[in-house]
Image (tube, rainbow over all chains, first blue to last red; front, side, top):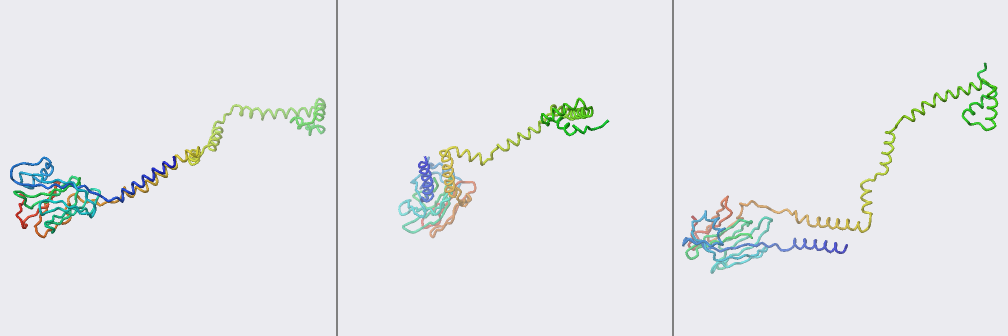
Length: 145
Length: 169
């Protein structure tokens, strides 16, 4: 009886300690969207984003070009190709109880064209847009999972 | 009339109290028929005893002392009553197995609480929901930040760059 109790006690303490020293990870959803005024097609998977930004933009069409879920670890950059010659680099800076601070870089041919740091919180989307893509504009939507 | 008989006065009280020897008893009883003084003294003693004894015995028979018994019972119960620690100690001392069953888990839980409490109640920074963009810089674009108060979206918009950009409405 005593040995079993000691075993479970040790197991509990070890699990708590390992959980506390394990590297923190943040699951981030990245969506690359082409917004344009060609047609009125809105991808069904973008309803949540378009519902939020439709009051800001006059685009009539939103098309999902790419979607990825990346697992961010502290100070470990993760690079995602956006479209030819451009890439998105995400780095977890700090993790909080209700979110995370993430450094976002957009690179073109190796040099930074945008360097920003944002606080991502559950239920909130940060969209980066502006660069032209074909007949529309690129929007990069970042959100915590 | 003499008030006291010199021959038996010393023995009369002992006789009355039944403390005489058989020889003395015989002596007094032989003397009493012939001595009216001693008979009167003996009668006086009996009358006096009756006056004192009867009321006392009657009072003792009729009197009830409940408060005395209550006081005595309380005293007995107070001596028999055990303290909290005595009860706890006796409970733990019922069997060594029971002592292990109680003490070891209690120590285990206490250690677990001590280990996990600092982790569970670690102070973390909480930021206001609206301050989303910490900083932003771009050497090739002008940057504008849209952060409507009532919307759950923040937009960082790049424009006037080397390529043609589309501005928001």
